[in-house]
Length: 138
Ligand code: CO
Image 1 (spheres, rainbow, N blue to C red):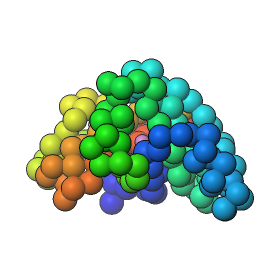
Image 2: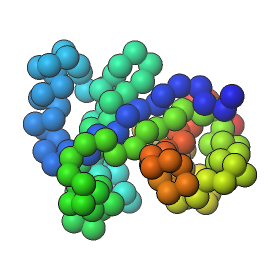
Image 3: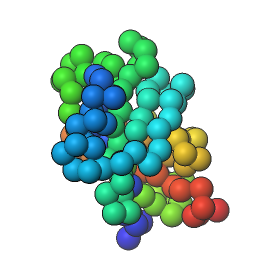
Image 4: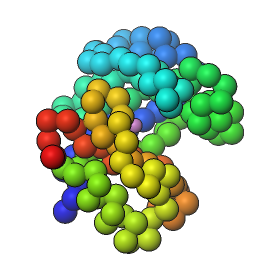
């Protein structure tokens, strides 16, 4: 089994501060990490749920894939991040199983992770992100 944890459930929102405020008031959740990822055109806030995160995600520019997703489908679930020990190994296994990769090689993600995205087409409609934490793997 290559998956070690649900790393995060990513939710696309228009107003990050409003979404954070809602999660804080509703669940008593706290933001562990907040980061603008320029290459992806997004700002994220990570809220802890045990060893996993809710990732609230908002676009920082109109050309961002998240901006396009919100324009097309509205706010809501955007992707699932599965934690793996070795992103390259997991990506190769998914491709061998017939997945359509968006990233053909792993690349840097937020908070010093290594990530690769898999297209929803061919993965039963879910955008999948493989997440390798920097402390793990090799
Ligand atoms: Co993600």
